Length: 247
Ligand SMILES: NC(=O)c1ccc[n+]([C@@H]2O[C@H](COP(=O)([O-])OP(=O)(O)OC[C@H]3O[C@@H](n4cnc5c(N)ncnc54)[C@H](OP(=O)(O)O)[C@@H]3O)[C@@H](O)[C@H]2O)c1
Image (cartoon, rainbow, N blue to C red; front, side, top):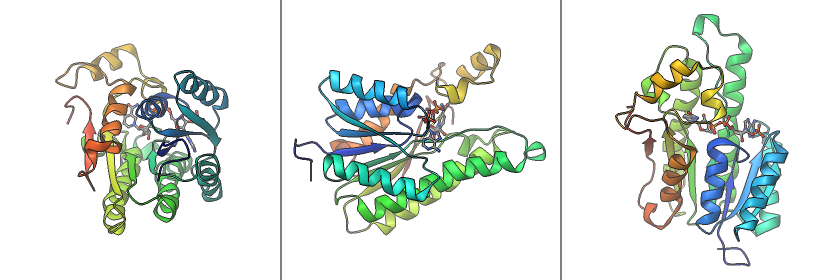
């Protein structure tokens, strides 16, 4: 069921910056009313909501740390209060903290599991209870779940678990006409990827894909637009690697 203005409703977690911001903007352009979730970047989220409104779209912002189940319930409450229900969940919020397993302290492990895995679980549980029939769910994995480079162990493990949840929930939602898929980007030009890397390393990683460039947030948003749009309806329980051919 669309909202009173005829729009379907999408929640994008971590929509304030990077890939999530590109997804929110793309889905608004596709005709969704969008809920831009953020943890700390209120100003960026508000600016994006303003940009979407300027372009004729509908968007609200909603602060919630996805690792907190009560906050995630309030996020869905806010979406329902503003737009009458939720049709699409894009689980984009995530963090990456690289460390060799031998060197990793507990905080490096716990923070990535809390946000990437428990955060995804929290929103999936809420969506499984509250998404309207005919909805779509897309989880952000990472191509590192397949590449498995040194220092990416904990991050890749958190994303492998996200892929497992994706496959299981697709089966559990039988009968509701809701698809559950994952998109696994490769190196993409955001703060998460660029922070702490030398220009030499960035240039090297840009050449890994046969298409010989880094991904842009809008490249990933295009894959999510497909999975949440009319042409993606027969894709269910799959992981789509949007990475220029890295793996
Ligand atoms: N960039 C890449 O190369 C790449 C490759 C593969 C997969 N991915 C995945 O793509 C997703 C987006 O990554 P990105 O590169 O766009 O990262 P980013 O630029 O660092 O942005 C991360 C976003 O997640 C939000 N966030 C972080 N912790 C949160 C929490 N606890 N609760 C709610 N929101 C939270 C941030 O909001 P605040 O600013 O408000 O904290 C921000 O909007 C992640 O799941 C990442 O693992 C990225």
